Image (cartoon, rainbow over all chains, first blue to last red; front, side, top):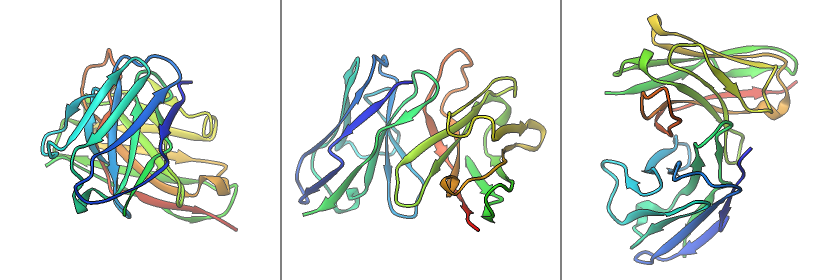
Length: 107
Length: 123
């Protein structure tokens, strides 16, 4: 099984800050990686797919990058509505696996 | 619009069974692989199972293999999860999710999720 190691597990930042969340796969996953945002009491929402493609309707301050085993989600200028928990997902092989999540909180 | 609506959750005793349903609308259900994902209280997301668009192929997480069965009825646009021998650690919100592409030769992520149904396993 492919293990996804996501860091950090929590992050405190201010509105307007730039933040980066990382996911490392235990083996190469050929950009088969998505990023999701989840707010309390809500279902996950897809932000990025294929490692770097922005989901339609998602603000351009979100971006994804990476290759091989290392992937990154960047929020260029945090807005108040961005405070949430973020997950990466590898879909290169079954079982699909999620990162442990990053809880982004307001400083 | 594309929509997934889960139902069937509830409180059940350890060792008992429960069947979840996921009603789909707004897309050609029979063209897409469908997934179940769960989230225990205060925890992260855990992928549970997938069924191929035609109902032939299915895969499970080790944590549920042999106890849970995924199935679908394409004529009813409905996905199911039969959960047997339930354990307290199965307590979670269960989401169904649609795979993002209909290409049967590749694995894709999930683009649409339901609102979830809550399962509580407790005596």
